[in-house]
Image 1 (tube, rainbow, N blue to C red):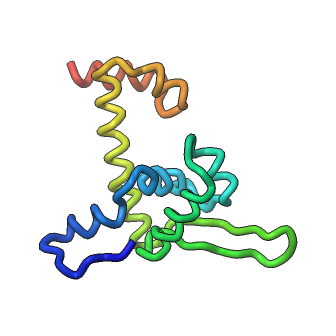
Image 2: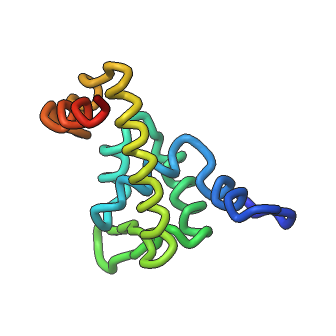
Length: 132
């Protein structure tokens, strides 16, 4: 994806950079550290390898993700967040994740959160108490 030349706001740029179904999910998966392509494929339910590679390439082009290739056989490649822009973006994505968690709790989607290991029953109960 190419960045346009006629932006009126920095948020437009960020929106274009992370636009799509998968980019924020990929970034969130990389928040704990470097991962191989196969690890990302296993952890991101429903993404094809082709789509994952395309999205990783775009995130790399925008300076959010870096790719490290290791010598030897079999070929081993790891993807990780860049120190500056990637780490900043994952902070924003983490906040977006919590907004989604709050929404799901408010709408009684607890089982999906628990089954995916996103939150525990205790965390859900705490959020409900805080919401009043």
